[in-house]
Length: 175
Ligand code: S3P
Image (tube, rainbow, N blue to C red; front, top):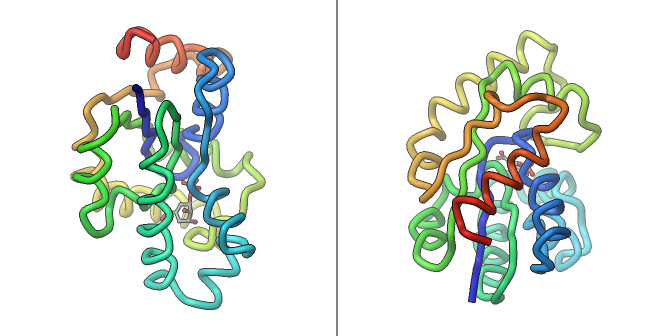
């Protein structure tokens, strides 16, 4: 029985890598944000707007406990998931946790390209975006770095980043 959880800041490629790894291994893939949206029948942005970040974190905690009980799955969690409650300890207790680590510059570039709605980054100018990422990463790094494995995606070639990440994960976990 295998359980893999991908963590990392917004824009680090958790969902894309998780999906690609699932395709190659045949393991089921769950994205925690999508799971929350389908269970709550609301978007993450709506939940933030209605219940604030605190309300979202409680829901995220409960939903994490649902998906993390599934067996033979790959889960990508939200960028903030490891940083609240005892989520990081909980994930480490039942899964191979992998931190997709990237620099603020790389994350900002990915996020500028991405279309996804991120309430915590909404309305930021390009300069503000990078500053915010830098500050949040400093605060979050102590949690992220508790992952059992760390892959520095900034070091990987842009064109083959996803495939290289998948290959490295398969090597590390002997998949
Ligand atoms: C968040 C990241 C988002 C989502 C929410 C909060 C965060 O997920 O859970 O907007 O606090 O970093 P992604 O990392 O998948 O964008």
